[in-house]
Structure formats: structure tokens, C-alpha cells
Image (cartoon, rainbow, N blue to C red; front, side, top):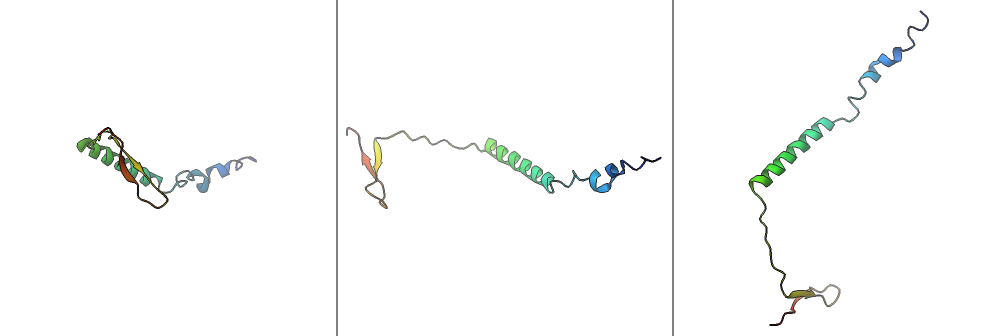
Amino acid sequence: MVLRGQDAWRRHPLLINCHRGMFPGLNYALGIFGVYLVVKYSYAAMFPPQRHSFPAGPFHFVKEGTGEVPEPVFSGNH
């Protein structure tokens, strides 16, 4: 037949499996990232972070100039 080899290029080895090597290492990266997420959220569930709530005090900080360390200033009624 005259048109028998017309579509032979579609079965070429370089074109059949090209999607498998498109992102080398992606499977490993997704697996490692998944393990990281499991460990992170498991650790957070076992040891919840402690909430330190400090009440807003009557202090504010004043910086005199560039390069100076801010000094706490009491602005209460005491």
C-alpha cells in the first residue's frame, strides 16, 4: 500500500515516551515535599505552639535619630 508508512513517525520511540522525561526528578520532589508536610503537621499536632500573649502596656518607643537605639517611654497615668 502506498500510504502504509505515513503515520510511522507517531510510533517512534523518541515521541512515545517523551512525556516521562519531561520533568526529571519531579516524582522524587513531590514525594519528599509530601513527607515534609506530614512531618510538619504531625509535629505541630503533637507539640502545639504556645501562645504568649502580652498585654499592650503603656509604653511606646521613641527613636531620636538615625543609628540610635529606640528608648521605651512610659506614657501612662502613673
